[in-house]
Image (tube, rainbow, N blue to C red; front, side):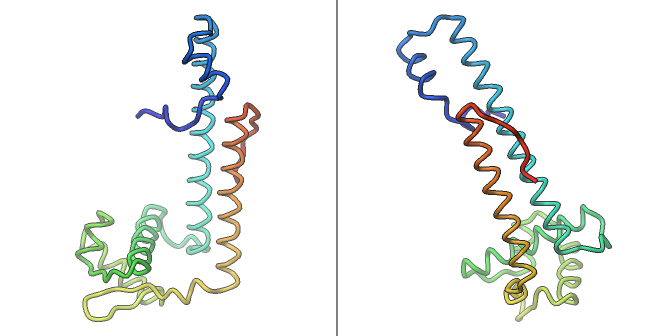
Length: 170
C-alpha cells in the first residue's frame, strides 16, 4: 500500500527538492524524514481507529456479553443502516447484506437481536434505526469523547507534519 500522499512534505524540503538545490545526502535525509513522518502519522491513524472502535464497543456492549467479532459486525450493520436511513434510503436485508458483506442468515439473526434490544424496527421489508435512542445525554457524552479523540489525532498529525511529535490519541 502506498502512503506517500498521507502527509505533505514540508515546503522547505519540497521547494529545494524540486529546484535541485539539495545535495544527494540532504535529499536522502529528506526522504528518510518523510518516511518517518508517514510512519508516525499512520501510527496515529491506527491508534485512532482502535480507540474509536474500543469506545464504541464499550458504549453499546458495556457488559461485554458478546464476542468482539460479533460486536463489530453488529455495529457495522447498525452504522450502515443508520447512514442509509439518514441519506433517505430504504434498506432491506438483501441490500444491507450486500453493503456490509455479512451473510443474509447471519444478518437476519443480528437484526432480530437488535429489534429485541429496541435499536431498530422494521416496516414491511425495510429496516430502520431508532435514531431517538442516540439523543440521550449518555450518548452525547460518548460522541463528545470520540470527537475529542479525532481532534487530538488531527492536532497530532499537524504536529508531526510541522516536525514536533509526541503520540497518544486515547
